[in-house]
Image (tube, rainbow, N blue to C red; front, side, top):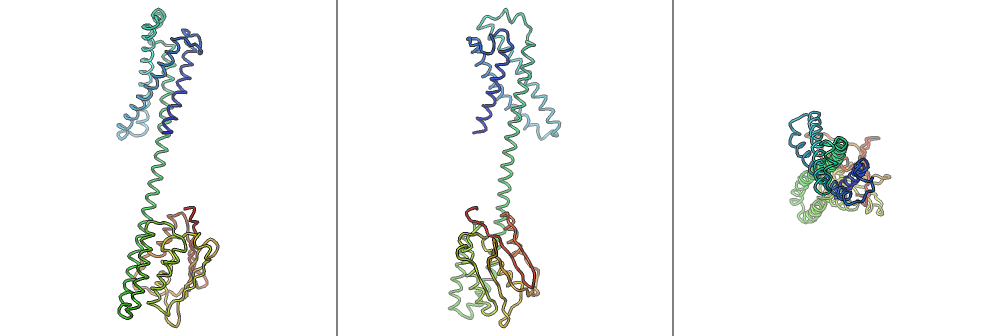
Length: 350
């Protein structure tokens, strides 16, 4: 709506200038500030005429451009539209001259004056053609600018939708990957300890509920992610009771203020368990702690031979999801440790 009002404001301003120029050079008027009935009617009539012709011509040029746009190369289309604009400008100027002449003769008895000049009036028609061309050039510029802005907005929406679609696709990879392993653990737990399996199912349901609640969330508070992780740790320690040691040191004052990607800590812990060896008398230590603006996970590197190729869902999933949010994670191997740093995200900014 704002663009429409702006367009008509520009049109009206240009037409006021045009009328002032015509009246200034037309000896039949007493200058620009002639407020006679003929002068006022000329002013109102010319404004209405040019506003109508401007709108009609702009519509026709736009329709013609769309209709033939797919049939010509850009340079040919530009030439074709330029000739079309010139033709419309000449026709518009001549028709205005005709209306001006006939109205003057019919309503103000100016037949003697008009009989002494040729039709179309050379001192009138050429300035009108230039003015008409100026109008259409400005109109095309306004239309082009508006279309360019609309195209940029549309492209931005498409890019945002594309990013969100990619992000959702990456998040959806987590569910089957995680629950496939969880159901395998549950099967063995039911057979060996039915009572413990009830608590296992309770924690598994908490995990599933958490996944459902964060399905549409791109960022969650660290406290929520930590609750999800603790339920996962409970489940995994049932399977490996003495093989894994977890040390989580996070400032309670920060975990509600800082955000993190859903399921990212759980995937990093799962990644450490998947790729490293451990046993009862030599457990794997996994640490989660804060370091400046990062939440870090760290574990000793004890690479084990995998039976098959890695799916790349864990670490690669996190890296790509953070990139889609505009952040980069840090992955480092040094001094025998594997460390991943996840940027904290301020929740109030998202």
